[in-house]
Length: 76
Image 1 (tube, rainbow, N blue to C red):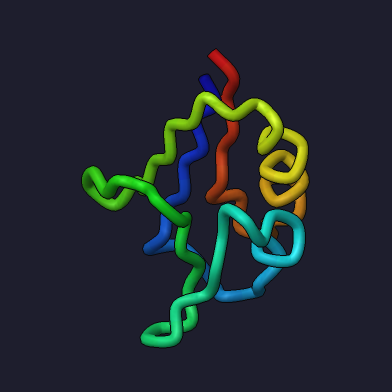
Image 2: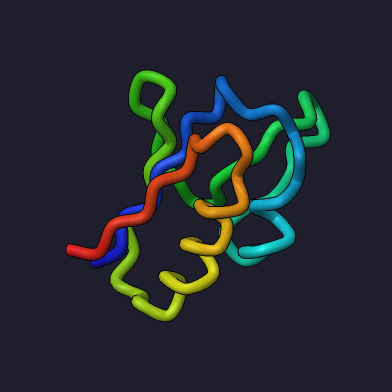
Protein backbone atom coordinates (compact mmCIF):
# COMPACT_ATOMS: atom_id res chain seq x y z
CA UNK A 1 0.00 0.00 0.00
CA UNK A 2 1.23 3.49 -0.89
CA UNK A 3 0.02 6.45 1.18
CA UNK A 4 0.43 9.95 -0.25
CA UNK A 5 -0.55 12.95 1.88
CA UNK A 6 -0.91 16.60 0.87
CA UNK A 7 -1.38 19.54 3.27
CA UNK A 8 -3.31 21.54 0.71
CA UNK A 9 -3.88 24.69 2.80
CA UNK A 10 -0.11 25.36 2.86
CA UNK A 11 0.26 24.98 -0.93
CA UNK A 12 1.85 27.97 -2.71
CA UNK A 13 0.81 26.83 -6.22
CA UNK A 14 4.29 26.29 -7.68
CA UNK A 15 3.07 23.37 -9.88
CA UNK A 16 6.16 21.17 -9.29
CA UNK A 17 4.06 18.26 -8.02
CA UNK A 18 2.00 18.29 -11.22
CA UNK A 19 5.18 18.33 -13.33
CA UNK A 20 6.65 15.37 -11.41
CA UNK A 21 3.49 13.27 -10.92
CA UNK A 22 0.74 14.43 -13.31
CA UNK A 23 -1.29 11.24 -12.77
CA UNK A 24 -1.64 12.02 -9.04
CA UNK A 25 -1.67 15.83 -8.87
CA UNK A 26 -3.40 18.66 -10.71
CA UNK A 27 -3.79 22.38 -10.09
CA UNK A 28 -7.16 23.76 -9.03
CA UNK A 29 -8.64 26.32 -11.38
CA UNK A 30 -10.53 27.85 -8.42
CA UNK A 31 -7.65 28.74 -6.10
CA UNK A 32 -4.44 27.77 -7.93
CA UNK A 33 -3.46 25.18 -5.32
CA UNK A 34 -2.50 21.56 -5.82
CA UNK A 35 -5.12 18.81 -5.74
CA UNK A 36 -4.23 15.20 -4.90
CA UNK A 37 -6.46 13.25 -7.27
CA UNK A 38 -8.84 10.70 -5.65
CA UNK A 39 -7.79 11.76 -2.15
CA UNK A 40 -9.87 11.97 1.03
CA UNK A 41 -9.77 15.14 3.17
CA UNK A 42 -9.37 14.79 6.92
CA UNK A 43 -8.77 18.09 8.75
CA UNK A 44 -6.75 19.64 5.92
CA UNK A 45 -4.71 16.53 5.17
CA UNK A 46 -5.64 15.07 1.79
CA UNK A 47 -4.71 11.39 1.69
CA UNK A 48 -4.54 8.93 -1.18
CA UNK A 49 -4.21 5.23 -0.35
CA UNK A 50 -3.27 3.14 -3.36
CA UNK A 51 -2.24 -0.50 -3.85
CA UNK A 52 -0.35 0.61 -6.99
CA UNK A 53 3.35 0.73 -6.09
CA UNK A 54 4.25 2.12 -9.53
CA UNK A 55 3.24 5.61 -8.33
CA UNK A 56 5.93 5.71 -5.62
CA UNK A 57 8.75 7.00 -7.81
CA UNK A 58 6.86 9.94 -9.31
CA UNK A 59 5.22 10.85 -5.99
CA UNK A 60 8.61 10.84 -4.26
CA UNK A 61 9.93 13.19 -6.96
CA UNK A 62 6.98 15.49 -6.23
CA UNK A 63 7.71 15.25 -2.49
CA UNK A 64 11.36 16.24 -3.03
CA UNK A 65 10.50 19.04 -5.47
CA UNK A 66 7.91 20.69 -3.20
CA UNK A 67 9.49 23.91 -1.83
CA UNK A 68 7.13 24.06 1.18
CA UNK A 69 7.45 20.33 2.04
CA UNK A 70 3.72 19.58 2.26
CA UNK A 71 3.75 16.20 0.45
CA UNK A 72 4.61 12.93 2.15
CA UNK A 73 4.90 9.48 0.59
CA UNK A 74 4.99 6.22 2.57
CA UNK A 75 5.00 2.58 1.57
CA UNK A 76 3.39 0.19 4.04
